[in-house]
Image (cartoon, rainbow over all chains, first blue to last red; front, side, top):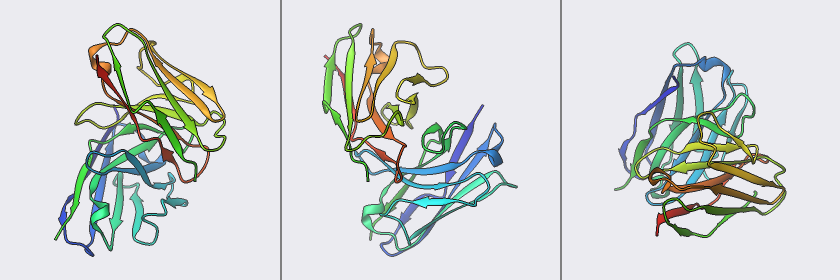
Length: 120
Length: 107
């Protein structure tokens, strides 16, 4: 079955950087697009970033554009999110999510999430 | 960007009854609409995509309808595990956007 496990979350000071990873198993990782979606404490869901199966296409939410970079290593079945210039507004649980094969735009499997806390 | 709104904010329903949740888009998204369920402390789970197609393993008491700008999620014969927050999400336009959620709570 599909298994997505995020790691790399933690506490970071404003202006700092963090790199999240998402280890995928149970499916052909190199054939699926992947997303990052975040959820601030007690708030709703916010789409963050998308990367195509081969890494050739990437999209970002305006709120993270220029600060976050999504990447993937298909040889290691792993998705990454490099987050720079973090602000308190970036405090959230970050989920990696798989696209369906029908459309890049919705998420048919989710990881359990990694908490990122930006605080001085 | 496409702004998604959901109503009501909280819906109080008794077990065994039917819950009707609404989702509206600020511009047409065609049938590019998905619904997710999120239980406390858990990741979201895909329920519906294409506005009306149930995802794999989703019970048939969940049904979706609508197109364009108006969508509905109906949950019939509510079970205890259905009390959760439900989000709609459009995927016709980038950036992808979610509604703020509707909490279905026990009456």
